[in-house]
Length: 556
Image (cartoon, rainbow, N blue to C red; front, top):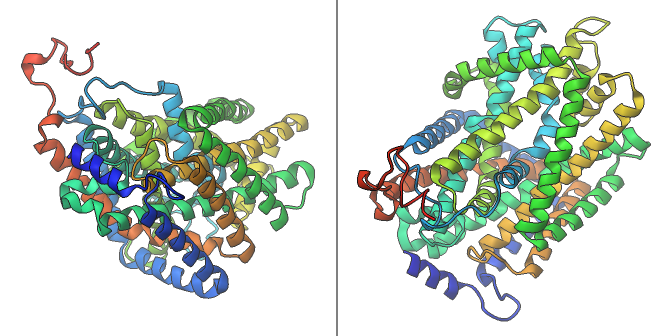
């Protein structure tokens, strides 16, 4: 497998000329694909939006059972692999060790996976589920309603956090875990190209180097380019609101396009510098600055109440997590809510899985399967839960104890008006009576929106060029520049044309074929670990008294 993979990659990648270091056919096809979708969307945004929305609407309405089943299968496959006898197998040679420290690894995991989303939705989403005014004509939270928590009380707040954790928790991260594990295993241990196609080797064999393999990787490029572009559009909209809040700058299109340009340039420079420099350094600083912002929310808010709220909501989520993963609403407003929220989120996580999974694999060489899965599954989710509870919990507490009565603090109204970017700043303004401190924290939040997105964008650029170079650890810098700036250009053009929402819908629709690939990946990794002699952990004769494999963890 290793020899054939090396030969296939070397023969497919151009050695000289303009395309040197990349697969020429893949490079041309990827650029053509992006241009076609952008042109189609820009020329008739209304038509494109109707087409994409119709596809997405059909998926959310007719295939909700399929998405829920897929995420549940992936979750249980990950749980099995985490505690199986293969947990001591290394993602690489038996003598390999991790390239990055645990802190750097966790920082990059978090940056690529959820960071900017937690800033954008960290207050708005819990508040939406806590509200009961049904601004969209259907229930805000069917799980709370079914439990009898129809009024805006603490019990409804707990149910709101349960749903928020569910959408950002173990089921969601299991998708990233599976993709990252498969790519790292087949790329570093089996020496296949570090591309999405390699994870299908146990299913289709050498055909991964043909048209089917090309299609799989191009689908991953599609999800990455448009996922990053649409997320950049969401991010700059909130950054523009922040600049307006701080300096009175007009938050309109001009400001947003300028922000896209600045972020794209910085992210491209970071991608050119490589994982070990720009991406790692910015990710680490993101963690430091986020700790400051989190501390402000924690100690500026009702500390004792928030800590108790966190313990209660985590327990509530863990108790209800498995039943929620199987729950399907078949009719009425609850079914519409599930399509607009849960199925949307499952599609969004799946569409981002090739990008985030590839990046996670790239930074995880040398770790054991169990170390990888525990680290990727539990550390980012635990941090995300605490973040969501502290930010969302503050907003819920404000609404519960508002002077004008429950629900009159102003944050809930911003969410009802769908002014989600402003919910973060509306909460910050009410945390303390020290206006200067509130202003500084709003400025820090705006800075974090930019830096968190830079780490997502530069990671996306590195993933795209890695796939187009058939898994090279060091894709050509000139192509990193092309794709890094290209992502920003796509975002700016779509923003000006009003097509970002349409492409976001298209990205979610693209999750359907990706979900099929994920199921084949789950089958492939289980099959390979069961049948491949090199993936069988040491036998009992080579194990230490504490159960540690002498040929694995303790080798000098």
